[in-house]
Length: 241
Image (cartoon, rainbow, N blue to C red; front, side, top):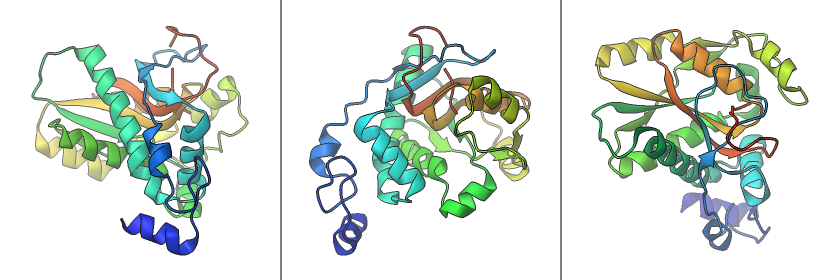
């Protein structure tokens, strides 16, 4: 409600149709029909686990991701989280089946570079992953967003890099956040880990995030994103970043 009022006062417009008002008008929101599916890149990085995405990186979804990430349109975190939650739910259903589990679901955001977060004034991936965790929790899943990873210094911007360059750039790029890891250890509970990002591209980022969490005995069940780029072969293998 506050976001909508702010958009009206400041002259906001829908990212989908440019109608004045809220960042995503009701009509455009109603057209968001997530179609979660495996989203393997081709070629897939070695060791990449099951990758899923809710949508193609195109149209209104692409506009939402860019506006949220680059322009700080924070009102879009909730609808983006809604899409991510749908993809997480579909991945769990496919990978685990109907069997119930007492394990908590940890959604681990792929971290942005500290300099990028400072420049943007917010962490877009953390925002939408937190929104997805809230939505999944509302359905009865014991889900929460846990910022286990931090980006090391020296990682370059991925824009414009091909798959091989991304893999080289991201080697050893992430480290575990000690405070978050200690807090998780103190809970002494079984967990299932899902690595989350906004966009899946070559898979290099997701593969490195998986490696980091696996290094402390937390293998990722899946990699899930809001959207995936089109450069992929169905049934082959995906990743983020």
